[in-house]
Image 1 (spheres, rainbow, N blue to C red):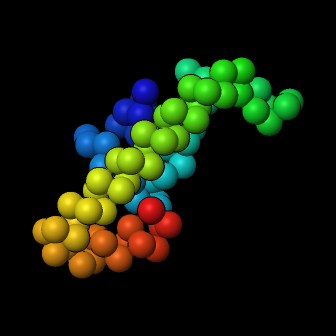
Image 2 (cartoon, rainbow, N blue to C red; image 1 turned 90 degrees about the vertical axis):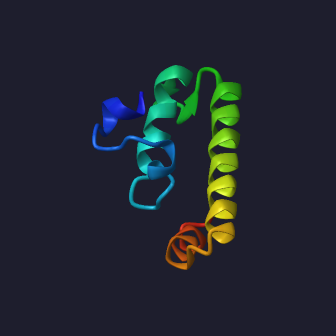
Length: 82
């Protein structure tokens, strides 16, 4: 689903930057059936589960950056609110 929206990305961690974060948010709308008239989802539990999974991925990536002493990438994660 994510590659349909941006084919230049090959890894999930590439979507965990503030410049690309809107792409997974848009991708959640398809399986959850976003209803613009009510500004909600037909199946909000799936949207919530996907959101929690994305947050876990962000935390895991931030920890890996800290472990690998990747200061520039860690600062990028901090700026994006992860």
